[in-house]
Structures are given as C-alpha cells and as structure tokens.
Image (cartoon, rainbow, N blue to C red; front, side, top):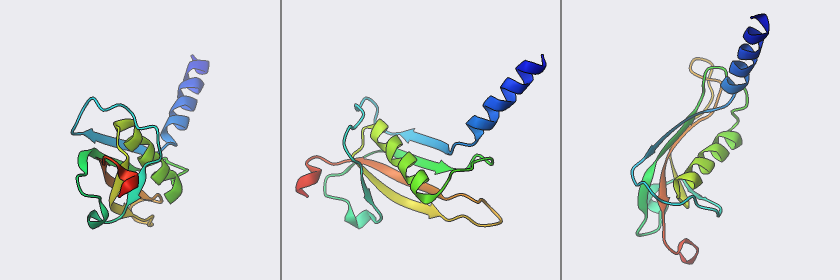
Length: 119
C-alpha cells in the first residue's frame, strides 16, 4: 500500500508542475496545423479574412514550476496548432505577481488565415 501511495504522489507532483490549459473550439474538424503559428498582439494586425477557430488560456495549476513567458507562449501556440490555427492573437497577458500567481498567464484567440504568407 505504501508503494502505491508513493507512486500516486509522484504522479500528482509531476502532473501538477505543468501549466494549466483551457481550450474552447468554435469550429470542429480542422486538421492540426503543421507550420509555425504566427503571433499577433493587436486585433488590428490580423489579416483580412481571419476565421476565429477558438480560444486558448494557459495559466497556473497552483504548483506550476516552469511558467516563464516563453514556456507559456510555446504551450499556447502548440494548442493553437492542434486546433488547426495558423495565427494566435494575444488578448490578455498577466505577469507574475506576489498576490495572484508566480506564473505568466496568457489568453488568446486562434485564427485560420488563407494565404498568410502573402499578407
């Protein structure tokens, strides 16, 4: 029984050290995107004809240890690509602070844009 408890505790610790991910898909059935996802910081930068596929939030589990901005952004772009998007618009970025979280938190919208390289 003790071995099971130690194993379960180890699994919980390793799983809880990852960032928290929340994904909401608005359009289903798109294949994952294999290329590099382009990041935008303002809605006015989005190319014309962008189709909203969903939203992504990357945050803190309470025990997250590796949540630098680069790590959080990489997780968000990975989720965007899985959703089938080639663009990610950052809608909110919360920086670490003593009272709320020691992690960066990122929220954004995932878009698909046809012929993105020509824009």
